[in-house]
Image (cartoon, rainbow, N blue to C red; front, side, top):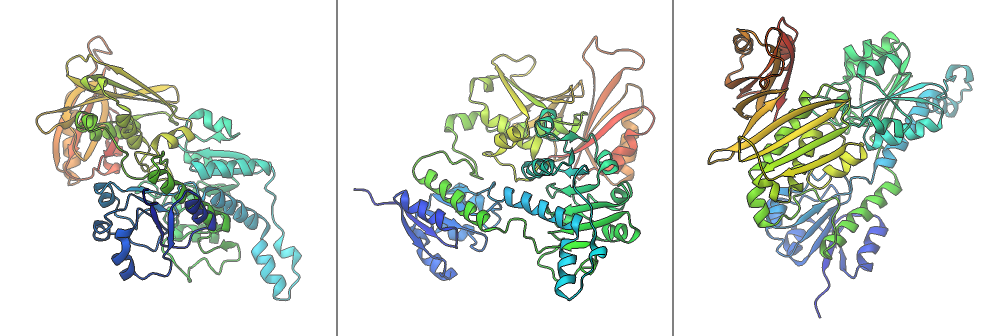
Length: 539
């Protein structure tokens, strides 16, 4: 009779998770009081592990985990696990990405209500011996407009709850399908500026990326309605603290509620003494139910991994047949790059549909893994979650993004091609690529309706312009003055018969060995003869 799998619960999780492991027939050991030395000595005894954030599973530690097949992280992030080392040793690493979404949405509503009705200030006054009703008169949520910046899982839950209070919900998120807004009774803002102009309350639910950091700056606050109230239960660096302070001082912002800060933990902040600011110490995920849910969901994943079931929240690469991986491997980076380029070039205000086509020999394989790479390129950095090979399809589904995949075993001009189309607001943006040479370098073959052939580098800019002499030179001069070293450039016209003659458009791709400043591309795109410009980082 085979021995039951042994599972180590290294940190405190909800009792329901521990009970689930026992009910699955596992030999469960609690190691919450172990020191690092004991874990290092005994990690080789276990088939599975449950951890939270304190346990650091380094590559060296994983090297000693000779029996380990699954790690469950009772929470969202997996920064404390060397995922690459785990993948190398065939260890499934899974988290609990949905464990705190309800809790975060409810805390948002709690702060929204506290801000509207001055609850913390009134409480402090009363327990201090005052009875100052007139000082704490608030405003109703009913019939007010709530602006939701970021319409992912948490933003959508907040919208549903706000609708229950009779609020009008206006949401901005370019990475959500048009129909998803309607399904939730929310209106779609075409731009963040449109949201600023209409919202009485604004709540942030954006991911932290280089693009979203400092999202609410002085310029954003200047565009908001007088007397707006702002809530941040997402990430501290989304808000420029000094700009918020100035907006509060001027009266542009009537109040703010903050659960997150630029650096944490923090006990001193310029806004902590403000009478119209409500603060909490990062409690967005802090409920007994969320803690229990995180442990239970992580335990579910460990049970599935050790019993041969489906692991739905693995953060490392799922198993792929060796023969398929060998054939598809060179196209994995290309597919991700095409997804990222396509969404950068898309000119609509939502992503409604992805049309992905595989042509040539790769079309004879199971290309779903390539489609996942396209999704990762489209979504990465634009959603709350860390996008990976396992969760990318479900994130797209939650946002109402339709996916159409087609395969054709014949291809023109090239042996194998990948085409990615983004349908956005009724407009379709297509990019096409392939891999070439002994090293299977990714090449871009078509973008913005023009054809060319350029090897992709980590940094590139794409321009659309009137087809006339001197345009490439102008780009070279501007980038040179900005200190950008061009690696390669390619120009392409539209296919024969499409918009030829005076006024016809062409496209240009420029690759560089360093990031191409967005302000330089924007300045060129706004100059005479240019129609549009985008900068894309593929690294």
